[in-house]
Length: 186
Image (cartoon, rainbow, N blue to C red; front, side, top):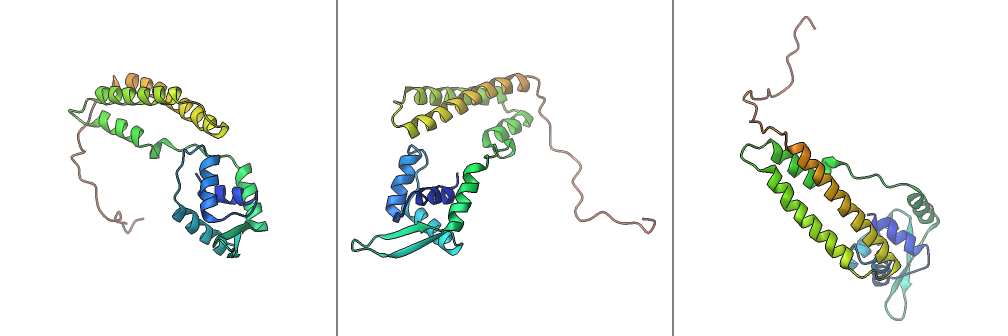
């Protein structure tokens, strides 16, 4: 999630001060991504440095209001129009854990999958039992439910695939270090 772009999107609605931005962010994301006020201020400093936001003098209450610039407005519009790429399985810790477990002698990948399935099913039950709340929370819950259901289907596939897995040992031949030698004939 881009906190930077989220802050810009909120500033596009009007000037805000740091704590106000934090509260607006949490309200607009259904509280699903907690952000601390320090993150907000460090992001605002970077936005100012990059020419996407400007700050005003402190008001009587000591609040420093931030405003979006034309460049910031353009940047947030581009972000809102751009699709978000799905994360690759290469960075999915659970996928890596199961893939690795299937290759390790003495590791019961089916048991690992069963434990994960119980945990995932419990999370799904908790999401489904949660009261819907605000519109933004409903959207976040729908995403969590669908993602969790998909993970359960994936775990079923893992069970089927891992049933035929054969663990393997570390390659006995040590890898060669350095660059390959180039012969005079090359």
